[in-house]
Image (cartoon, rainbow, N blue to C red; front, side, top):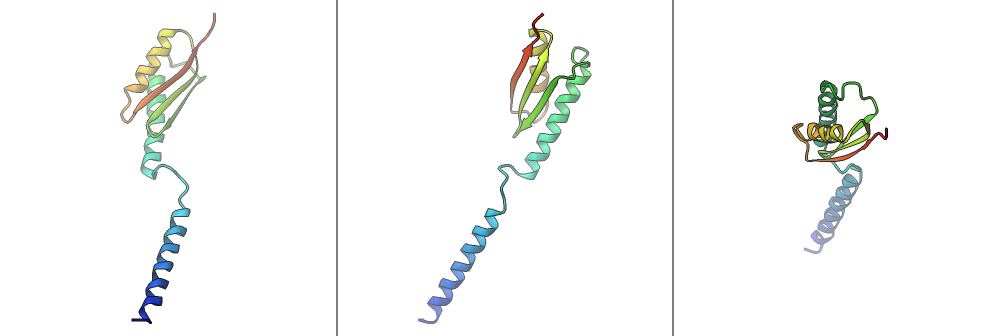
Length: 107
């Protein structure tokens, strides 16, 4: 019994050390599947904006997606365009929320 205790302690120590080292290598806060979905969401939102006649010539609208939360930034011509862009982004599959930071150009 006395010889097994040090062996059990050493095994437990080795396993906890391996778990700590293994966990330290993973620095991302989202899974690879989520990262892929965000890339797909970003492309889908940009495609929807490009296919809409009102936004087809807009090059100064940035689209980002993190964990399904889409952020729109840049300038649009009117408040109606700003709202429409937000609605288009919300219609994309996988979008959880839209942060519409689009600014209306002053005329």
